[in-house]
Image (cartoon, rainbow, N blue to C red; front, side):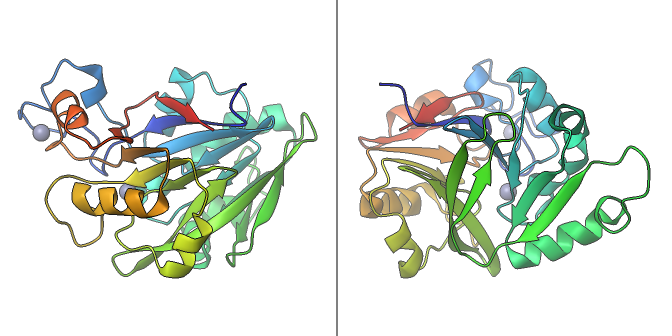
Length: 262
Ligand SMILES: [Zn+2]
Ligand SMILES: [Zn+2]
């Protein structure tokens, strides 16, 4: 049976992207395409509804690479630049949708994004700007509808912490996506119960104050008991081939363009 929820990992790299500008380390110079990582983003397709998670600096190239033709909604995880600065590149989708694309974000992110893109959100009179609406989430599950099919997808926000910054992960059926986090409170672990496929921030082997290290992410994966866990947001200290085969059963490193689902 085809997966009900299909996730295309548009980007799987940390904020610099890999290769890092000016770096000649073995991963940045690797010829393995899985070592080239654009900034983190994902396209989630649920029952004919297309949902974009984050729109970073590589969004345009990612959308062209994956031939994305439609986006019904955008979910932001948080307001760091590598997750939001591609918002304006959504303009081509508006002509296709012929209606505003709703964007959803945690409250602080909603404020920052509205400020960053004030020409879009505060004054809709400027011609040719992206026709978007922006909504602050309060953690309550909500529904996103496809204008084309009329189908509806249910989204469950998963509140988590990225150092001192509040972020949201998102759950769709048996799939959950959590990037940029190093702490998931118990109340949110409860929301991950029954998840089969977990996409999770795992920066690198070494500890970091705002991202899970590999060991920390493996521990989360064990607690969730996901069938598959896929790591994202990795740095250039992570060589795909070597590190992927060293992972415990059920845990793998994602790469740009990988499709997973449940
Ligand atoms: Zn990030
Ligand atoms: Zn490097």
